[in-house]
Length: 250
Image (tube, rainbow, N blue to C red; front, side, top):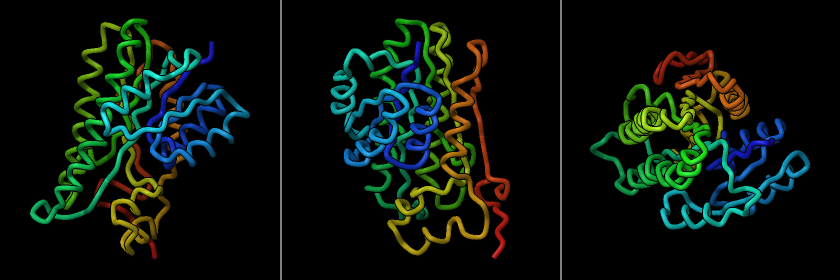
C-alpha cells in the first residue's frame, strides 16, 4: 500500500524539493502552503508520478490548520508521514535592536505552527500505532550564534519538541526524527534580509547545500526499516564547520 505524506512549507526550498523526491519514490502527497498558485504548479508537475492534494493555509493560523486538515478527502486522510518543514527567519539583529514583529513571526511559524499541524495529525497516528514525524530543524537549534537570538531560540524549541514527541509517542510505535541542516542555498536569506544586498553574499565563495540534498536525506530517513529510527541528523556543507565557521574562497 502506498504511503501518504503531508508536507508543510511545500511551495519552495526544502519542502518543494522533498515533494519532488517523495513523488519520484511513489509516495502520495498532501502539499501545504500559503501560495496557492505555486502549489498548483507543483501539483501539475507531480501528478504524473503520484496522487497529490493541496491545502492552502498558514501554519500560524490555528483555526485554518485544523479546518484544512479536517477537510482532507478520504483518499488522503490517512497520513503516514508528517514533514513539519514550514519555517522562517526574520532579521539578524542584536537582541536590543530586534523587531518584536520579527520575533512574533518566527515563534508563530517555527514553533506554534509546528505544534498546530502536529496536533491535527498525531491522533490518527496514535490510534493506528504507526507513523513517522520529521521536524526540520537547523544547525541554529544546536548552537547560538551572534545576532541569531530569537531564530536560534525557535530552532532550539523545535529540537526540544522533537525530543518530547519521541518520548511521549514511544508507546505508540511512532517514529520521530529531526533533520537539521546548516547552510542551504534557498530563498531563506532573501526573506531574512528582506531582499537586501546581504542576502546575495550569504552563499558566495563556497558550495552550499542545496534543497535537493536535504530532500534526499529526508527520504533516506523515512525509508529505513520499521525497527530503525534516525532520531537526530545534523548536516553541513563541507565548507562549514559550525554556525560561524565557513571556508570561503573569492
